[in-house]
Image (spheres, rainbow, N blue to C red):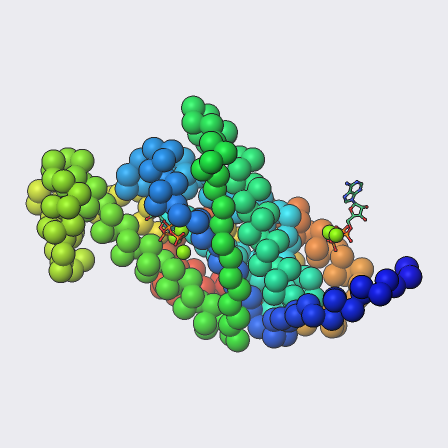
Length: 271
Ligand code: ATP
Ligand code: ATP
Ligand code: MG
Ligand code: MG
Ligand code: MG
Ligand code: MG
Ligand code: MG
């Protein structure tokens, strides 16, 4: 195509290419979901429909973007891990981050009526998600990243469970519940729940306590192939793998990711 005299403005565009051979984690987070959740009457502290919707949207993202090896979600956030060899969009950061945010947002809005049939979305209060990409040099940091998000899930959920139990069952105002929990450690919070309300925190829904892990269940033989360096693969082989990844079932797990167990088998889903 002939170039116009305006073409030079393109040279002002700056692309950040994410470092090669590093794991890419893309984390999305709902914008203003404190207000959003109140406005649509999410159950407190945990609305199961809202978490189901987050998980369903994330699964669709994984179906459409086969480079995603696995994901972790809790509250209004989801993190997607891309394999080290990922070459999607030539690893251009802006392309990756904006595509994940918009694909997820589109899926979330599309799936909304399935999860909230009685509460249609209001155009003045539509959900949107921000996104960032972070690079990690080895599986060690990826693992610690998952642990960090799950520890965050635990801390927030224990606090929120206490807070809302004090408000909804204990009859405290939100202000008084906040005061009551000020300076308490996790042992104190477990004790409040147990001695005052007969609630054993460990019996709360495991999805609330642990969040959700999504992994692509490609089967052991494919997983071994996926571990090979990309440059050693023929084009046909790479295409076959991509097809397999697209077709693979996505497993939804509510498990501990801080201990070793989940990771002893990690080669099966991440490379
Ligand atoms: P920001 O735009 O900075 O992310 P935010 O209001 O979204 O602001 P977050 O720290 O992301 O703040 O917190 C998300 C909030 O959304 C939670 O504090 C909680 O109030 C609400 N929320 C998210 N998911 C659920 C859910 N499944 N059930 C009930 N409330 C939820
Ligand atoms: P990429 O993902 O790299 O952006 P692309 O297929 O979106 O790939 P673009 O250069 O963005 O490529 O071009 C968008 C294409 O979408 C156009 O070439 C045209 O075929 C199609 N298109 C967009 N808007 C319209 C429209 N209003 N009517 C008809 N075709 C359209
Ligand atoms: Mg935020
Ligand atoms: Mg948020
Ligand atoms: Mg959040
Ligand atoms: Mg385009
Ligand atoms: Mg275009």
